[in-house]
Length: 433
Image 1 (cartoon, rainbow, N blue to C red):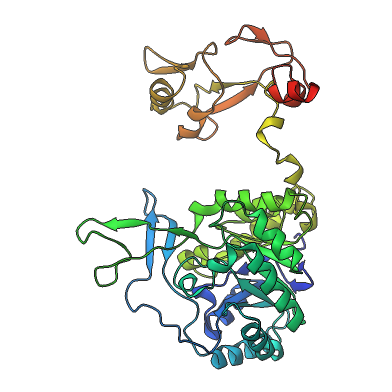
Image 2: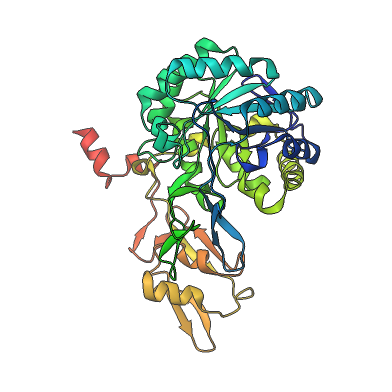
C-alpha cells in the first residue's frame, strides 16, 4: 500500500487526514477515539483566554441542508469556541500527546487582539507537547462580535500583526486559519506570510442562515423564538474551498506557503482534489460528525489505492493540478466538443431533452418512440445534458478532430496553441497594439 506518512511544516503524522478544530475535537475522550480510529492528527477545538467566560447556547446549535435522500449537504452551526476551562483542556492535551506521540496534535487559539493576551496563552501551552498552533481568524459568529475570529481575519493588517506576536512568543509552528468571508482570500494569506506564518489553513465556515421556520418566522436553529447567522460547512462548501485553495497555491505572492485544506472533505477523492490543488494535508469535520470517526479508514484505503494505481507517491499528488488552473482569457476557445448519447444506456427519461429544450440551445431532438438524439448544428457543448442525465456515461462529450467541420458554425476546427493566440481574442489584439 502507498506510503501515506505526512510531514506538514515539520509536523509528522501517519497519514494526511486531520480532524479540524470543531466539536469532534473538544475533549480528551473524543480525541483518543479519533486516534484509535486512524486519524493522523487533530486540531483541538479552539481555546480562549481566561477572560470573559464563553457560554454556549443550551438549545439547538445546528441547522442542516439535506439532499433529496436526507443526506447531509451542509451544516450551519452557532456554537462558540470551547466553554471548558483552559486548565482542563491543557491537562487533557498533555495527556493525549504523551500517549500518542506519533499523531499530530495542533492547538487552535483565539484570544483578544492584544499582544499580552497572545503572549500569556502561548506561554501556558508550551509544555503540553503539542506540535503546533492554529490561529482561528475565521469564525463568523459569536466571537466576531467580540473583535475576534473573522473580525480579525477580514483585516490583513491584524492578521500580520497577530502572527508576528505568535512567532515572537512561541517556538511552535504556526498555522493561520483563514476566513472565506472576504472578497479576495489571497490578501489575508499574503498577510499571514508576511507575519511569518509557517502555513495557512482554509476555509473556515461561511457566514450563513440555512433556513427559516415558517411557523415561528425565525432562522433555524431557533433559540426561544430568535435565530442568528452561523458558520456553514460540509460538502456544499467544497467548491468554494477548492477555489480559494487554488488561488493561494497559484498566486505569485503566496505561492509556496504550505496549505492545509478544509471544506467538505467527505471521501478520499475529495482529499485528493484538495491536495492536487496545492494542499499538503486536509482537515475534516462535517463528515466525521455525520458518519463517525471510522470514516477515515475509507479515506486512507481509498487514497492509498489511488496512489498505487497511478504509481504515485503522496508528494507527487500535492500541487499536481495547480499549473492547469488558469484565468478565463487563457482558455482555448478553439477546443470544440459535441454531446453524444449512448442509445444502449439511455433509459428515455427525457431529462436531457427538457433541460436543453427549455433552458439551453434546443440541441436535443425527441424522435418517435422517445429516442433522444443530439442536433450537432445547435450543440454548443455546454454539457448540461450530461450533468442532468441520471445514467453514468450515457452522455459523453466528443472532441472534434483538427480540420473536422463544426456543424454549428460551418467552419473547420483549426489548430491554435491556446485561446491567447486565437485571432478572435480581444486581449491578443490589445497585446499586439
